[in-house]
Length: 94
Image (cartoon, rainbow, N blue to C red):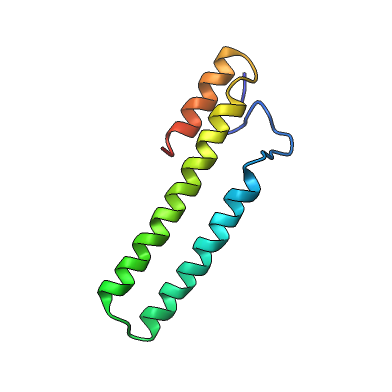
């Protein structure tokens, strides 16, 4: 029986998509820093909200890419019970 927070594949977990996801997250981080500066500089709230929407969208897209890649490449490992546990664990983030 596996621990509820363990995964059947505890090895270094890397996929071909990870560099692209990292790039998206770094770009979103830069945009988020820009939003903080906008607020500090007293920019109009509508402009800040628009930029926050863009950051939120970038994070959502990165998360979806990570989850979809996980589902495509990781859910075929282990027993059927392991696969179900993995799907349940990752699906809460959808």
